[in-house]
Image (cartoon, rainbow, N blue to C red; front, side, top):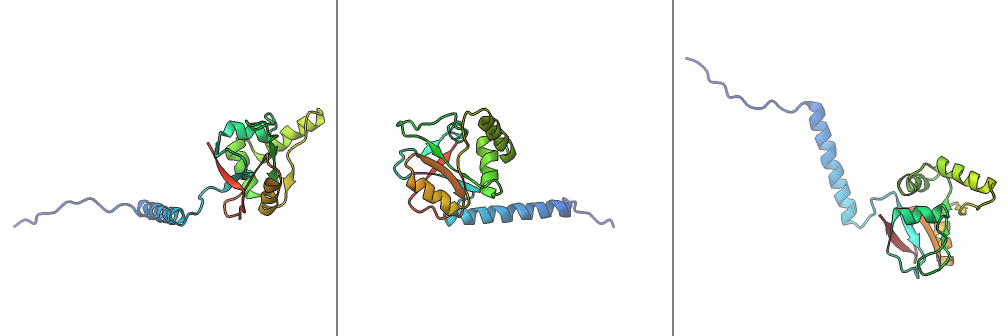
Length: 159
């Protein structure tokens, strides 16, 4: 009498199961945050509430923050405002929108200052200070951390 063996797939290796578990947990967390209306981006870009823009290109925002573009499409003077160099919002904004590190942006401004061409945007100490600046100046554009209170400012998407 012979015993028949049923061949089945061996269980997935332990590291693969752990990775799958972490992936599923991450998706659940992301879904929960989106369902609650939380932003998953590390920062939000703000403009004055009277600014007609709802979406801006990365190239336009980069040009405004590097002062290669000085006016909005309606002729209003563009007034960018940065956060301190040691903030997470500044690092991620610089990396993802300006496509250069904070140190590279600092070097850019050192060269511009030395050649007498321009001054960098003001650096403010907090999300609240950026919100206040944006509300005070019609042509302002700034960014804050994703959890910041934005008061009456308008959030614009950057693509």
